[in-house]
Length: 208
Length: 208
Image (cartoon, rainbow over all chains, first blue to last red; front, side):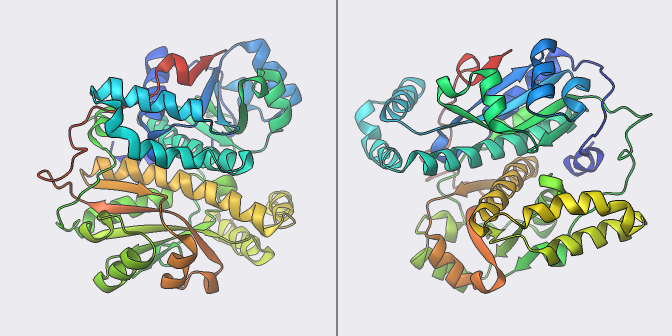
């Protein structure tokens, strides 16, 4: 299937059938997220992969009551960094130097640029980090479709409660968007087979 | 090539060679953006596709001096809605009803939910819209790689100036991220062939 066919195949699955996503397919989706582009390559977000049924139940009861939480086999929680610290920049610069076998001094200019980010407010940095997480979400949606795994991105949850359930705040993380992975319930999903609704090319794109 | 191979092939191309992206490949990238998921399916962002050399020159001089602006053949400007209005929700609901041949009343509950979004501040809505645009950016990055087109996402530009150059403010739009499309300059791009630097699986993902 081509990429466009995959994107047409996918939809925001409303009901899933409980079938588990196999480990190799899950791994490919995670690898795609890991390879997703991000601002300056900083990847300022974590992904919590929840398949523990008790935790999913707690999330479903307390933070997000959509049925896919329990009917999917895995829930990806995209948790953006609450800030960007000098230590995180240092770690990244060292990792580049090690990975590329480059002298750290050759990265001084790049490092100085990144250090400027640490001067922004935590709120600015969290918003910026959240946007990078959404790139990961977009790539994950394509990767899931590529694996013929259904994926439902969701914003309709209580981030403060979810952060508490997963202990994210202590880790300097804040959940921004989640994605259930599983398989469509062909008998019960009212949205299955519904025609895709999209803005027209003329409306959405301006050619200059 | 698999999706993972495509993601490994792509990189944030620093220098492009001026070769133009063919129309069919560009079209596939735009279609992928159009099919990208978004919150409630609202697609609250436009994409300005700039290939006019004079406009690109102006953007390069005034808003973003990175060489890919002029060395690529097309610049995608992701411009998020500055707010979400009741009219926009109405239009969307009508479009769903028409596309799916559904009575508008059957969408009343959904519409009421979306109308709540219009009660948020313009700043909240613009931030929310920006995040949806970043999903589109992620999908576009995959689509470009799929087409073997190089793509460089960039945040390092002056949005206020870019908005002025493209007349976005009058349209209720604000640029949030841009992406140059073209072909890598194999002779002059220092980043070509550099090993990808990524956070480790253990660092980025938490299994629960």
